[in-house]
Image (cartoon, rainbow, N blue to C red; front, side):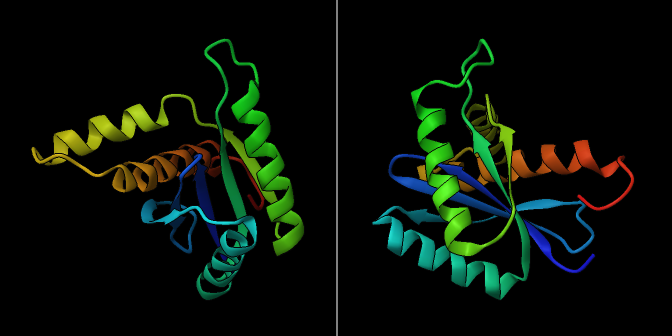
Length: 143
């Protein structure tokens, strides 16, 4: 495998970012970007993708409890479509239901101190990416 995968948990104010290792086995939180303009967001993500040798981006899709795509999922899709055009990298979507809640629970269990929202965002991105990796790891061929 040549590059790594990057995962994004796109919110209204922040974007949680996670990355996997070169073997596409383990995801970890990387950072949280405070959202600015799309142009600034995309420039930061482009630099990060270049620096980390990213081959694909996995974007968390916030579906409803009924497994439907509501207004927030449509906003995330539009954002990801524009990002894909700007970066010229393939993008996959992954159902992110409960990833933020899961991230909060895991962080609370790991440390009794209160975690900042930025930590939750990047941890949620790592959960999204790890689920994606786990699902695709048993499949033959490239992810």
